[in-house]
Length: 446
Image (cartoon, rainbow, N blue to C red; front, top):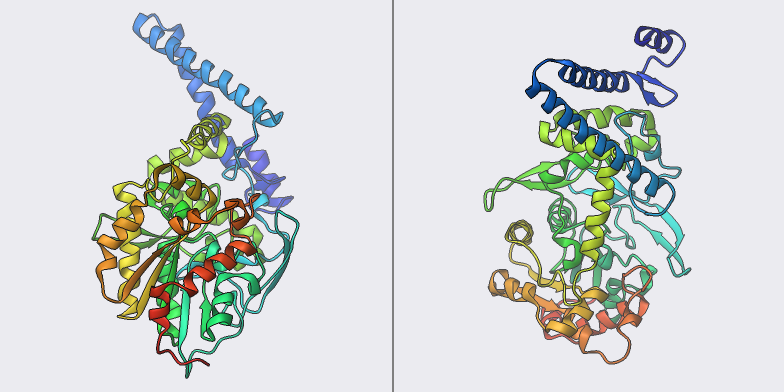
């Protein structure tokens, strides 16, 4: 049967190892392994050795229990009783679901800092509240108006993720635009959603630093800025091949690494959009480069509903965190080391410029602060990098919490990002903050 299928693929198919979207060679190999396993169990049960019989029967019982639970997991996911991620089967299929219908506005477009925009692009969309949003990029790929590399007046550069980007508002309503309009000083926005401190550092080093500027503002979102890509996440590349920088090794001797051998291997790359048929080769490349431990994890995650049921249960328990839980106060030593190392590298690149780290709270952070009135992150940053004469830290958490009325008005509640009111309030805080005013004092207005 296998020979027949190979000949069919060679002469009547695409000669690419796929028939009807299925990777028949890998599937056939898995069938052979399963058949061999049950054949060995059958031999063990039929042998005269009681020890081998007991071992075989015990193992068969475990396999049977697993199959029952796998059927149960399949049933609850497929019937919608449980809603969550399910196996993608990318190792056994052509991963067609990774192909985008439209060229992505955000994607893995830069070989240094990965996620970025394409230049001179426009995206029209609606946020989860139904508001119409229009996003556009300049010739450098930043979601900002057109800028020049040189300037005869003072300028400010902003780095960060979706909060700095202004993900849920139009450009004129977001923090950077409001600051520029009120101060008369250019505020260049290099924020992009889904990034973290290592991206801020690399974006600054390879792009933002090229623009004349006097002040650097870095938005820190503790809610997800401790969730950098790490080598422990390499097994996830079969499910979602993405190009991400990460720190490899031990603090302070980290080395820069990337999750994939090439940015073109990413399912979020322009190359993949133009050549969707190449994605399976990229998945195979990532899979081959993994350790045996990561390969095993990748195979289980890619094929088994039980794995995703356990992950669903784990997330449910995590989501039931106590009301005082906040990433402003909860992070491990390893997470802090990676986080702080990225900021240290960023400060080296800033080379003495005035830098303000802006700590950005989510609605959950503000609610948690109502219980604990504590910001461990602000204390740790002030104790380390905050002692440098050119570095300032502005913690918006207690400021947002101190406001009377509805905290929810500052956020798009169905999404969690700042609303137009949240952007307005944050900009008013900065415009009146002594650190911000001191950093901009003396700068020439355009």
